[in-house]
Image 1 (spheres, rainbow, N blue to C red):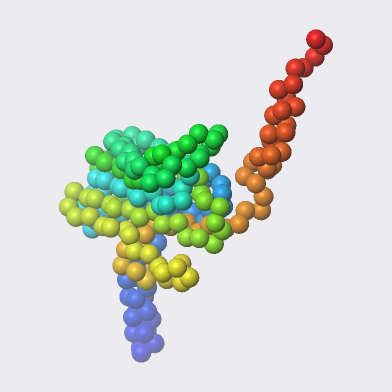
Image 2: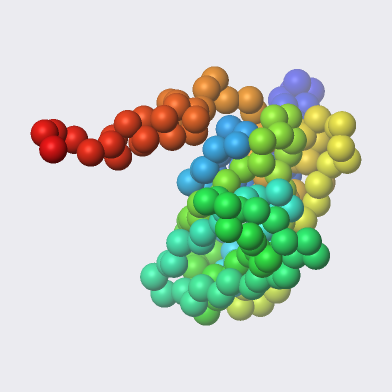
Length: 199
Ligand SMILES: [Cu+2]
């Protein structure tokens, strides 16, 4: 009898940790330096209230970012000017980056799963945790999924916070994303652009 009481208590504690029911990145790991297709999963509303807006803050260090439009939602891209323009792909200078992306005007029932997709070029910093802080607005109420852990602490500690920020941990990839280095590809390109066939 006592044992059963104990296990019921344990169950009650487990049930009060809704780690799997949070707003999270679908995959919690990504390769450093890779262009990565990512999905933010929204598995519940605010209590019984449906989700009407999802706002993601793009973390510093993301090189390229492209959100996917979602049927039934308005997509807004908020940009910010860089203090210092920096070279981007193909050598052209970048003076503005995407700061936030907002899907609004939707109506995702509280008990249904919503998935919001984007492409992000990860910085080449294995071991770093990238936080995609998210604000979820509902017909009634909102949740700010913005809690993080201090640098140097294990990322799992985030699950002890009230509203963990969605995140991915960057790991060192086994090789270049395209299976070859940009230098190898550049050399091959030069060969291909040579005039072919008899002159
Ligand atoms: Cu949750």
